[in-house]
Length: 633
Image (tube, rainbow, N blue to C red; front, top):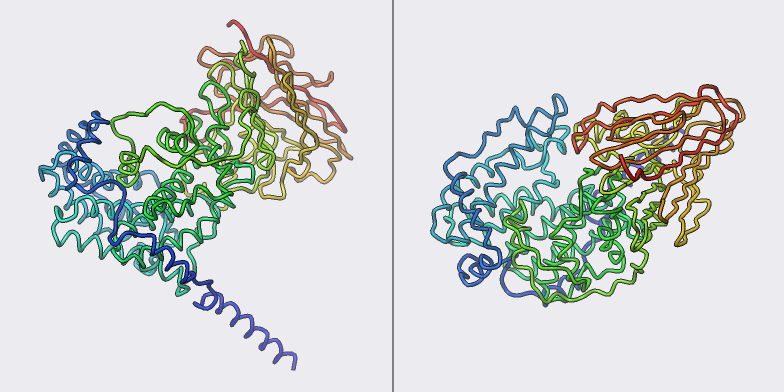
């Protein structure tokens, strides 16, 4: 009887699991909503920009951006060369040794030719770039898969046993559809059919199957990170430029409405902090805005994803994440040189009604789809009403849900000195083990730094991610306790015990005990006090106690030069800026341990971990670092 019940229960569990992948288990798109959207749409497909036949529109683009004539010279150079070779061995390199850069560099060059040839042809309209463009499209459509090797770990797409949708093939679906929309009958019937057939087989069919419950959802549709925005932008943009049927286009808009909420909920905390960092705000939120604008224009302004309440604070992240003098936060998998995207900033400034100058440049984007979206952006965009007090910006930015505090010197300050403090948790997308870390900017240099991300390899997104010394806590200005680095995961979190923000000073206190696997630790409080005024400073105080004595060390991370200028004093300098560091261990003996972090970082600089190591085990101690500017070198 027990065996029968056991087998019966197993059958029920199996049937329940099977049901999770049947059409009935998926919440279908609302047919009434699809009909409602279809009534908003024009009778024919339309992408961003204007077809090549609208010569007045392209003449206006060239008049507003005369530097675009450089594209013609680049297209002529590229036309004289065949598409770069992309052999199977290059695709398989990632599965062999984890290198993703070699394939992606060649793939990007091949795909970029489509944008260059199409844009040049639209500007010139002489037909000389059609043939090299069609050869490029043929080569692209002959590839085994458009999925990146790094996203095809089991090589199922490479071998044709699966058809997935990732960042690359969704993005280039929008590229191909834009090429077809802009050039139309200037392309041969065979090329136009090749484009439609490949879009259907590689993107549209598997996407419809996922949404309709005929296959499992792609993980990114509920994944809560930048993939959701990027892939939905690409698939939806391709569909809107391809399908003449209003009902078909309405179906894709309804699907985007349904699944884009995952990105806003998972990619941001409620206060608008982008947990993936500034670089991914440019990428993910940039694609979200392109998706939103495409749908807004297509529906005659009746659907505006950017007006969703959950997007209201996210639009301000780029503006609020500047530390000082054009230096921005480098938290998470970022390049420390990241700044807010100019084209995204300009679009949002129009939507927010901010007074920013018109932006001109030669080539705006690497992608044709985003290029024409920017070139043909309407001037009379509707202004959003975003409820946020930006009066804090001269003084500070505080993301209470994200746990990130930026302290600035305030208006009319004479001494450029600012800091960023990182709380939150160690379980966010693209996050590092960095609770209690901090960065210090003096002048226009980040002298005590968060080194940002590493060059992506197979390790970066695998089980060995935190073996990287720029991703684990060794690469951040945080304590090492009893020889242990911080834990990863959401359970490791900085609990905010106290905040006090005034015009004279800002302070915050974190409880960091959950970040370390130390059962015998009674207390670990890290306090930050930022003082403004003629001689601004930052005080970082660690108050720690143990049941049984243990080792303790604090740390600083820098790209700069470290010089000892006194018994307990250091000077850290880089590119003409410098800060002074006073070390106070309460009389306990300590030594400094300077170690270069030998990882391949996004900015190609090797940061230095400077350990401030107490010589003896302790039951309790207070270690304080006082950091201030150096007025002359």
